[in-house]
Amino acid sequence: MHMKIIFSALSLLACSLTATAAQRGELLIWINADKGYDGLQQVADRFTEQTGIRARVEHPEDLAKRFETASASGNGPDIVLWPQDRLGDFIDKGLVAPVSPAEALRDELVSVGWDAFTIGGQTWGYPVGAEAIMLVYNKALIANPPAAFEDIPALDAELSSRGVEAIGWDYTNAYFTWPIIAANGGYVFKRQADGRYDTADVGIDHPGALEGGRLLQRFVAEGVLPAGGMAGNAAELAMQAGKQAMWITGPWSWEGLRRAGIDFGVAPLPTIAGKPARPFVGVLGAMISAKSPNRDEAQRFIEQFLMTPAGLSQVNADKPIGVPLNKRLFWDMVTDEHVRISMDGVTFGRPMPSAPQMSLFWEQMTVALQAIANGSQAEQALSDAARRMRGEPVVAPSLELSPDVAVEATTEAAPLIAPIPEAEVQAPAEIAEAPVAPTDASTEAATATEATQPAPKGDTGPVSETAPGSAPTGA
Image (cartoon, rainbow, N blue to C red):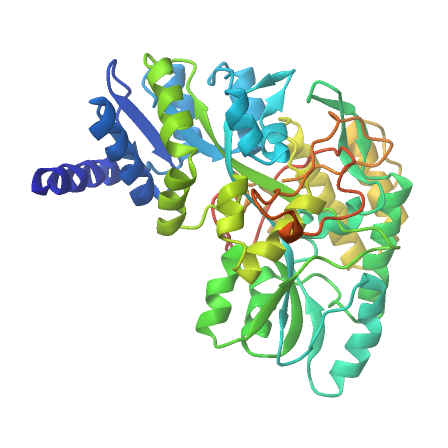
């Protein structure tokens, strides 16, 4: 027993200092430092005990870039855990191998997780957990958040007499404002039946997207949101100070609110024109390196150890994996109100597109949202951005990025999943579902009426508030 503890400690110490290369007969697993690497090492130790195959967990800095460079030279890990936002790049560069999960395992997980890792008709990873942004509200300021975005201006007028703002978020950041743009049919790129994206078919100027843009324009014009933009930390500080009633953010913000003594609730994002908001969803998944000399052992570790409720629970106990996609584990955790409601965001949301061209989307949506924040018409701003994404000429650019504005795509996804596309978007059938209770059907979580529709997917974007993984840290 003592030898096991010493071995685990030495393994973790080595992991934190440097990244090594996979060797035949030993498993090397990489995971980002903001995830539960200690818990994952416990799963790896159990694998070693039962199989005799040594398994080590490392969390190197700048993991995604390190994985690309190391794997290209044959020196990467056997398994890498990362959200699906980089999957397109990894596949194009030949860094990850397709997998064929057992049917029993497929049935144990929510289908949207598998969808996030399906491209070209093949599965490229095992979905672990998912995250999506939602509405966080201060229970001391409002008992129940409004069901529709259109109701927020009236609430703002009521709260302003008490020196409180109704809502705030980093609204010039496409990651946080995208749910409004996508609610009534907006999409980034049209998704094809095989899971790939037609990057020539851009939907940020879809009529539904323009409707969402006009709502944002109204909020700025009426003072519901501050003109010129709102930094993510400004909204966070206002919430922690009790000066703001609602905040569009993700699970990574909960701990800060708890430390500030805020009694907060979590709710699905309000509707727009009667349609549910559609946040981007990030899905953390385990992928097998195409250069791994231990593919069979890697698959065995993932399927028989990591992806079990016991394995996922060990990782989650170290640091949350988001909304668990294993149905049994979800129902074990359903008593946590925040986790339960977060599933709605996952159900309503859409997996982030993994197309390499997403960087152009982040850049041009930032330009468009800055333009709206500074008084431009939403139709013009979004139409100009769509033309630039298509490579079409724009007669009068609505706004150019100021030199001090950095635009970068998230490397993970704060998070975390679910497809519910509109008719314009082609997607694999039946990719959204809520976990089904294994025993008592009466305890099934309520899902949206449109949850059976397929949906396009999204990708993580620039995130300026502090968020885990894929979301870059910033203000």
